[in-house]
Length: 328
Length: 175
Picture 1 (cartoon, rainbow over the protein chains, first blue to last red):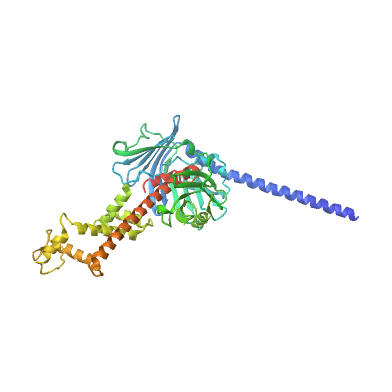
Picture 2: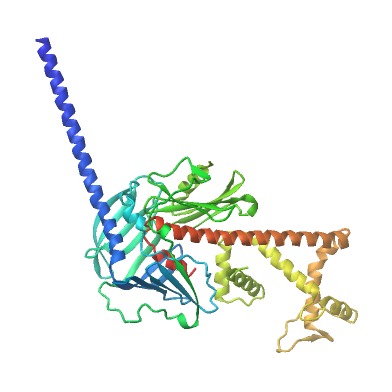
């Protein structure tokens, strides 16, 4: 009698354990499927920006600075062509033909000719490295909205911890191209925003639509994106520094020795990124911090080195990262 | 010195001369927000101007002219020119009177010190040298910071899907 009761109890516990495991597996399955389905939005967005032809004007605001620009993008048999130019202020334009970029400035312009060269719409890494799973974020479809006279899907990238910013995206319902984006902090204050004011997704381009208008009387310089930088994470050398803490999901994506005494490390979680620059204190970089939009630049002295953080992370995370830097 | 630093210096001079326009003011505001050691830069600019005054202003030695004219002057009233011509006060050109007043204002604190000839000018020269070195270091740091910022943007556009790229990098071109 006692043995029977004992056996029944064991059997009941066994069934419960099996059922619990099945239930948990089911929940995990649903969660995983859901996560992958939501991250598909981002894959489609990147793909659309790279494979569609479009023409439009957009504004980009960070801090108190607002820029208004026009863009033309064509994908054809000869590859990708792009022309981006400023509407206000000094007339500057960038012409891109696949990986060759030429920047034109008016002759005698005060612009800094060492400005950053845009590398093309969105990262290849984002698309192919597996980072599209974005472990640091919860991806959510918030519903429909209207941007630039088009119906858009609103997507929220909410960080799982408060160690990075949130992103709100508006993707065209039909083509998934990005129409609008915002970077917001923990209080949901907007730090940076981008938005197409108008966009034509079926443009007819004039034969000289991708020819520079400034070419006649201008300064220009040509850049080629190095093949080694196009989207594959190649870390072949050990850096002189390491971090004993990183926000979840961030990975080392680039190491560079700029000079004998200056080096750079770049980390990314697939959406946000930050860079660390190292140089001897004797070079005179003072300690300090400043921000513009979502980007913080902070310099601290440690181990006789000036360590400069530049990245799109909140101040608390930036400071924690700097204090986690240790020499190898 | 790169193009931006040269322009900033010109805006700075224009502002000190009360000839700055909106673009100059925007440059100065950006500079003030950049977190650089403004006080050191301003002191350096003032010292450079003092040096200009002492070495000659307008193509002739102001101090020499002022002291020559000083012996014959009877009044020193600073009256700005109102007729479009240099106003003369009892035979002394207005420019010379202004120059003299400026020199007095600058040199009085030096004269008030003991052993001003040795200590005043030696200290002044050393401070000026230190300020020059310090200012050059700061300018170099600022230039490197800009370089770091650009490198970060470039690498970010390659290593992450920062949502506003490449539009962000295109926007940075204007700044």
